[in-house]
Length: 251
Image 1: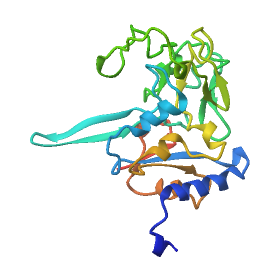
Image 2: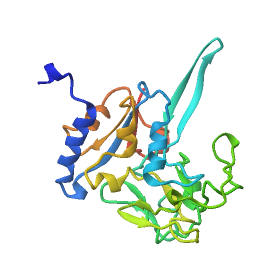
Image 3: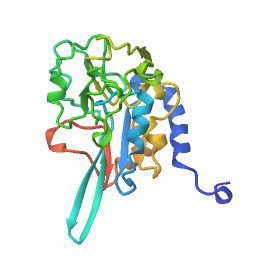
Image 4: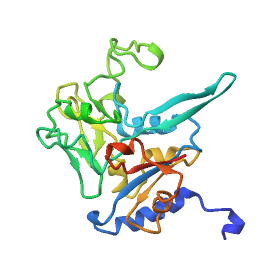
């Protein structure tokens, strides 16, 4: 059938693998991500999809795309590196938390307990990848908060979208403008666990136009990510730190 319809879309394969993984006990699966830098075009669609999925306020970005220029004029080009939380197996951010609000769950994902977090930001300083941000409760309508390219939004009152509750970790978190979770908390990428547990791939994976972001259960030897992380061109950022990231890059 594939000869008639063409090769199977990698999203279809990952979706099938996800359904297979969800049939196992949580402790029996290990989520990992692979980002193929050769296919990333720097469109930032993953960043926007993440903001929309998690209703992130100004200053909170789970998945920035770092850009750098390589080469010497006139022979120059640009390289793009999506940088979510790397979900370290040995995370420097968790042992510094004085209230154990951040920890590694049984699926290998570093998470944050918003009810437990006291906003001390020790974990932000400890992360060597700058993958954590703090939620100060800003909204895009605040006149003192700069948005894209220095523009200031002039409305005085927040719209319905900004007051809508965040939905993360399988729970709703209201944004009423008062100092209550997630306002004041440390926040970060969590592999869209609320989507994954509902049988959907992370928002950044499904939105990537080049299919450069791949996700799955590394404890499944037949999964796509299990194949890719063994390739000789698979690397992890700053491996010399011993953090053992669960996000790999193909170069």
